[in-house]
Amino acid sequence: MTVMSDPCPCGYDSRTQPITWEDGYALSLHYDKIRKFLDIVVRDNSRWLGVLRCTNCGRLWGEDAISSGQADFHYVYPIAATNPEAWLASAEPLVLPHRRDKSS
Image (cartoon, rainbow, N blue to C red; front, side, top):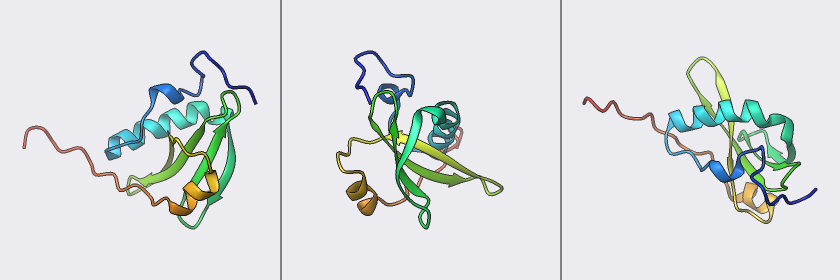
C-alpha cells in the first residue's frame, strides 16, 4: 500500500461525513463508483457498520447504511481513525434526517 501525494481516485479529500439523508444517498452513489478501491478492514454486520481501507492511498472509510423504505443503501465516508477496530467498537449508526423543504 502506497500513500499517494496526488488526490486519490477514492475521493477521500473531497468527501465528508454526511449530515442529511440526501448526503448519505449521494455517498452511496459514490461508494458504487469507488468500491473497487476499498477492502474491508473490519465489519459489524449486526449494526451494518464497517471500516474499509483504500488500496491506493491507505486511508480509512467508515461504512454505514440508510433506508429509503423500500431499499437499503450502504455508503462510506472518510474517517480519521488510526485504529479501525477501536473506531468500530465506539461507532454508532448515523441518524440522517431528510433535508427540510425550503418552502415550509
